[in-house]
Length: 481
Image (tube, rainbow, N blue to C red; front, side, top):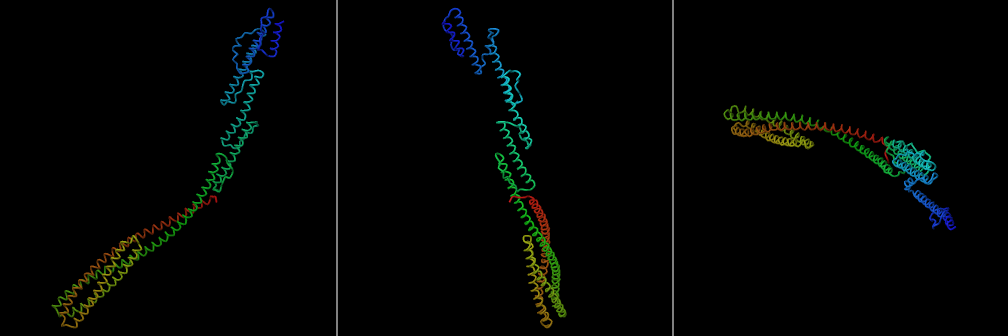
């Protein structure tokens, strides 16, 4: 009865899944075997609990040990069931790990093989496949949408019906496309207007992130281009005014140089005339010098031939009259030469740097003219004295010898003066030739200046035309105010 009571107590505990106690005590006979069998069942159930605990904890370490345990009977299902359960769990884990690895590698098209499993295990694989299907659909659509975006198609959107985070991804991507389309449309419109010359553009919409610097840059570009075009327009107007002023100045300069060239030509003609008169003056002076020498010789012979004194006096009187007229002509030429020298000095002063040498020559001519005038005045006085003395000699014959000696002295002085006049006239002719050469050089400079002024006026007209063309080009732009 004690054995039965102990066996009943242990079986009651085992019926409540309490396998922590064994039957203690030694019993005889059938009771001892019953106690031993109950304890053996308790040990096996404890082993099953241990294996189940390991499986529950994810530890499949008992598989190899179970495979080595032989079946206890033909109806033994515990060990094979445990083996199949562990094998199915391991196969399920391996299949899901393989699917996860392939998915992690980026291949979301792979699916688990449901045919390898039964019951709930097949449902696990099918559920995993459904998860992949739910994940890959928005990913594939998002990929296609992004590919179209990469090709510049901003009309694409995600249209699939998704839930949860996938719906959030769809909304975020569609909102991004909307923002991009808005930004690109506004930027494109602004650039098109700028391309059509309308710089009065400004983006006022709110831009976010990296698009804000693009908005600022475009607004700064339109402002900068407007300012630049305004400055170019203002500069073109100033260039036009300056070119017009230069053109007017060049035309005035060309006209002035033309008039100056005409005046120089007239001056050259006057100088040529003066040169001709001066050459004649030199010839007359040389003739007068020879005539004075002849008079001297006649006076010397007059001492020997008193009979010819009256005739000689008449000849001397006549020659003196001629000399007086010549001296008068020389005096007039000297006066005109002085006036021309003054005019030449004035023109040389107007010529500036190019007329310095001409001014020196003009001053020299003026000096020579003064000397010629002074010599002519002195000669005139001498000639008048000689005429007076000839008259006295003609009226007073007794004083002929004394008067003749006086005449000889005066004629000697007269000869020297006439020689000086002839020398001065020759020098004057040389100086006038130099003046003529200087005037020719000035004329060449004036002609060059005239051509340069005309070219400058033409270039200024061309510059004015280019400035006007530039203003018209700038006026085609609509600028910011």
